[in-house]
Image (cartoon, rainbow, N blue to C red; front, side, top):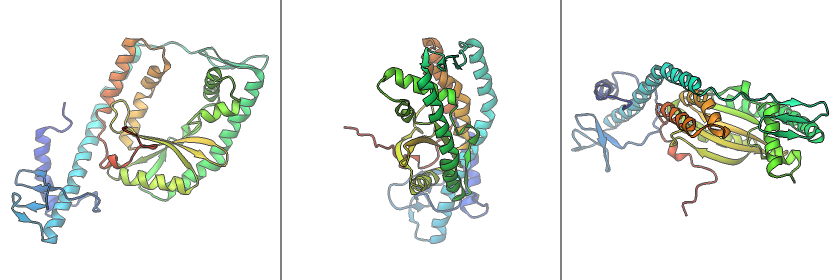
Length: 331
C-alpha cells in the first residue's frame, strides 16, 4: 500500500501553496535543498533547466517569487515526513502484534546460561568454552574495555553531543556489551583461530562499546556528516561505515571506530527516532536469523517481518551523499 494516498497528496498541495505564499510558517527553515521543482498549477513537477513558474513560462527572476518556491519546497519536506511519522505511529501497534504472533509460532530454543566452572573455566551455549587461563585473561580484558568505554570514550561522545542540541545520544544503558556476550565472541574467535591471544580475539569484536545518535529526519544528513567530522576531531579512527538506508531489512547508518592509543573499537549508529524504533522492534528477529538455528520457514518469516517494519521508514533527504567507507569498488 502506498505510504501517501492521492487524497493526501491533493490535501498537501492545497496547504503547501499557502506556505509558499508566506501565509503559513515552514518548520524546516534554511535553504539546504536545491531548487529543482516548479509549481505548474497542479502541484509540482521536475525542472531540468532554470526554475520557472506559471506553467513553466516565466523565469524566476523575482527574489520574492524564488523565495516562495523555496518555501514550498521545504514545506513539502515538512509535510511529507510529518505524514510518514504519523503513519509509523499508527502502524506500530499492528507491528508489535505481528511480532507476538511470530514468537508464539516460533518460540525458540532456550539457551543455557553461561557459567564459570569450579576449575575456573567458562562454558556457554553452542559448545563455547574458555580454559581457566583464557577465562582469567578475558575477565581482565572485558574490565579494561568497560573502564575505557566509561572513562574515555563516553566523555568524548558527550562532548560531541553537546556541540549540537538538535540531536542526542540514545540508549546509553546499552553502551557496554555484557561480559558473557563478549566472552562468547572471544570463544568464537579462538575456536576459528586458535593461534590468537585473548586480547587479539577481543580486538576483532567491532562493538564491545556501542553508541547511537538520533536526529530529526529533516536534519539527519547534515548532522551525520558533521558528527563524523567531530568523531575524527576527537582522535578516533574510522574503520568502516555502511549506509543502509537502501536496505529492506534495516534502516540507518552503522559505523565502526577505533581509539588508536589502545586499539579499543566501538560502534556508532546514526538513526532517526523512527528508524531507531524499527531497529528495536526487529532486533530479536535479527538475532534469530543470525543464530543459524532458525528453520528455513522461520528465517523467511523473520526476514519478511523485518521487511514489513522497514518499509514504513522513510529515508531522510540527501542520505545518498553519505558514502560507505571504505567506498565500494564497482570494478
